Image 1 (tube, rainbow, N blue to C red):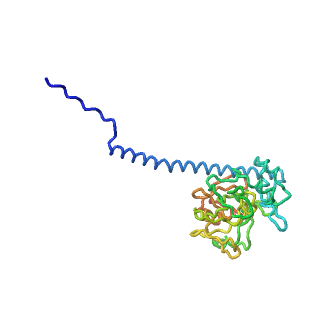
Image 2 (cartoon, one colour):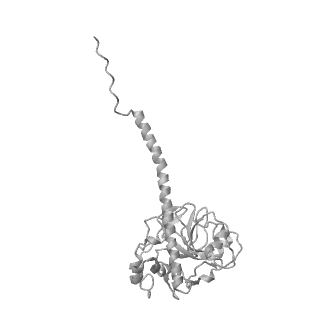
Image 3 (cartoon, helix red, strand yellow):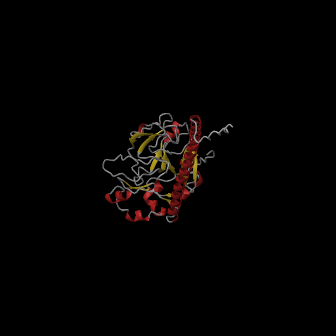
Length: 310
């Protein structure tokens, strides 16, 4: 008699082709998953940034509620010095009383005592999408807690000229003034139609057209620096991001309104636009495709140029 034929043992391993197919499938899935995760993370960062700005809005209105319906000045000046920034003024209204109690209101922002407090890295002043590593442009001051938010107290005449808008003849004031408080009643264009605070991310690192240049800006040392949290709108070159900050009197202005250069110009790390706090306390995402006329109207507070397309 013949012995029965034995059945072949079942395989317990992949062939090389099967393994390569599995690896390829995993690679495709990872390739699909990573952008989705990044998109979700950026959406969360943008929301966190927006919440920071909402806290500023509440702080500003709480300040106004105890100061005759007046918003604070962008900075307090003495005849010869930039004495204190608006950020210190509102700290007490964003649950940072511990810093306010230690701040010497009778000395400059960069006095020895105040510099110790200015080194605090406060989450409220940082957009989570902005870079962490900030360079220190000063050889005499310590590295300070940074800020990614800025009040634009002015839009310059050259912006209107560069963008072929009606020439106002002078630089125009933004919502909040430099050196004195602003009555809410003076925002006659409407608090819901006027910017209060915009993003200006990455200072004092110089960032142009999405790239850190490796250079440092001459101002914007941190949230306590009056020059780092208030500025003027000039516009920049949309192709190069160039702005002549060292001799601004000869600079002709530019047509790029945001996200071209973070040297005292609106700049965010969010794709397509910037988070913007309005004087009524609301926060909206403004597209970088907004027209120059609308953008200028949103900066100014009392020209009667009510924007409609944002």
